[in-house]
Structures are given as structure tokens and as C-alpha cells.
Length: 418
Image (cartoon, rainbow, N blue to C red; front, side):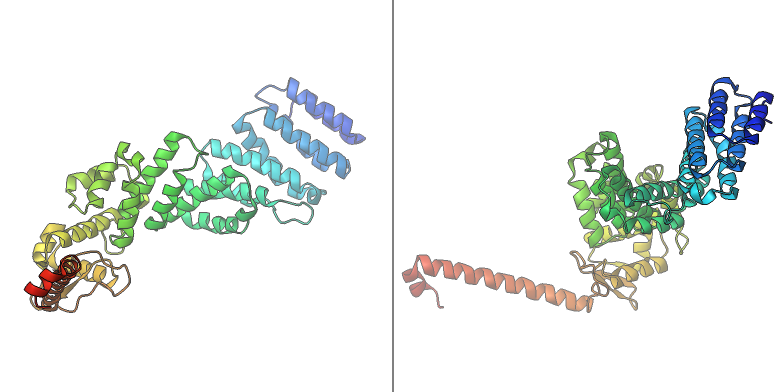
């Protein structure tokens, strides 16, 4: 309950409503109330203001002053206790339709307190309830973006990428008109985090890498973002697209000082990864990056198997199912299925002989186009390689003959039958 002095003053002010009296009471609360009763006094004050017949202008002014007084106390627990009461009370007030701006400011204040307490879902729900499309309050694109960015970031803090993406899609409709560099940076970073959470690792790696060059963030944050780009690049499906992404990250001079550089280098050069290297890398991954896929393996394990398979294709012209499975840590059937999937998706060039249980690798990089990785037959492959070598030799001889004829025509006419 409010202190007797404040309660009596509010009762007296209610007999003949006067904004000046309420302003004086608010000042006395700020200067007289102690920490034990200030919450009760402020709650009684806002209830009296909303119930009083003070008119639109005076009520708005007093509610605005109340929010300023609450903010000045700089007490997050108090913001939550008193703020939640006021947020619930305003919609029930007679003049609630005239207090839309004050309600929004109050919700933002209470949301800030929840964020400080790491109650991110509560903060996001308060911000989401702010009316941004009211005909009585004009809200610019920058203000909308600021609210939606906070909502997205709060949901990402609890790994709710689905809800976060809903608000990110709203942001996409207004960000082209927002000039604030900080908001644009938060938007890009949120988009990268959602791509990361949705396992769109190639897109996330590119987004993180682009952000790592932003001068708007500190050097240590840029390096952290670059490390995130490397992690996503490593977790991406093996193939030509990932190879290009890893190439860009490896050629970034800043990557040499990061812990992830060792595994990045081995992947870039298509070297086989050991269990110890993978386990060390896994220690710094987020939970969603270690989540299990539909086949029961983790995202990381799947990425490593595909990478080692691609590395094996650089070492061998052909290999049996069981031998490949032993190399990848799988049984022969799963090794065959993984290879077939990569060939079918155009991420690996080769063919499978299911009768002899042998995988033939084409060598070189696959095109990345679905269905383009399959070779006609292993014998055909060897014949095409032989034909290509003979053709290359013949072309070299022809170029040499042309050069001699241009330089020594008499010698060529006498010695060489053309």
C-alpha cells in the first residue's frame, strides 16, 4: 500500500482534479518515498491519474512525467514491478486511445529491464505488443526497425530462430529506407545468425564474412565475426561452393591469428581430418551447430564425413565401399549412400559400380549442378583420359612445328614432311 502521506494527498487531489496537484505529488514521491514504499506510491499515483477526470492533455503530460520519474530511478526491478502494473492499467483507462505513445515508451522501458535480467522472451513480447500502425500515432521506418531489431535479437538469444525470422521479414520491407548504420548492422548480423540457426551455413558464412569488414564494430568483434564465418564455412556441405567460400576465408590475412585457422587450412587443401582435430573444433560450436540431422549424425559429423570423402577423391582413382567406410568411420552401405548423394547433387565427380562395389572418382572439381557429377563408366573414363593425353601431345607437336616453320622455313622444308 502507498504511504499514508501519499495516499492522503492523492485522495485530496481526486476531489477537485488539478494537474498541478498531481505534479506536486509526483515530485514528493521522487524526493520523499524510500526504497521500500516507492513502488507502492508510484503504483497508487498512476492509478489515480488514469482514474481522474483530468482531460486528454493533462493525463498525457502526467503519464509522460511518471515514465520519466520511473526511468530516473534507474532500478530494473522497480521498472518491472511498477511498469507492468502501468502497462496493464493503461488499456483499461478511459483515455487509453490517447495514450498510445506513452504506452509504447513504457513498454520499451520495461523491456529494457527484462533484457538486463536476461528475460529475453518477456522483453520480446512487450515490444511486439507496441502498436506501430495506429492512425493516431505516426511511426517512421527507423523507429519500426529499431523495435523489430530488438525483438529479433531477443528471440535469437533464446535460439527461437523461427519467431525471429518472422520479424526479420518485416524488417526487410523497411530497411531500404533506414539510414542508421547501427540499425543496418544489427539487421545484417541478425540475418546471418538466423541463416546460421537454420543451417544455411554457406549463406551465413558469406554474411558473417561481409560483416567482419564493417568499420562500425570494434576490432575484436570483427575477428569474432570472422571466426563465426569460418565455423559456418566448415559446417557447410562439401562441394565446389564450399571450396570457394573456404578459399575466400583462407586468403583473408586475419584468419591466421584465429584458433579455427588450422582446421580451415586442412579443409582448404582437401586434407583428411583426424578425430582429435574435429573434437577440438567442436568445443567452441553452438548447440544448433552440433544438433542431430535426420540420419542421426550431427551437423559437424556430417560435414566432416563429406569433407573426408572429397579428400579421398583426391587421393584415390577408385576405392571399395568397405575400404571407404573404414576411412570415413562408416559402414560400407552408408559410405555408398553418402557418395551417391554427393554425386547426384553435383558435389563430387565420379561413378559407382554396385556390382563390383567400387567407387570411381573422376578427379578435379565437380560443377555443383545437380546430376552433373556422374561419370559414364570407369572404363570410359580411362579411355577419355588416354585420348586427351594423345590429343594434347599432338597439339604440342603441331605448335612446335608451326614455330619452327615460322623461324626456319628452309630447314622444315628439307627435314620435316608437313
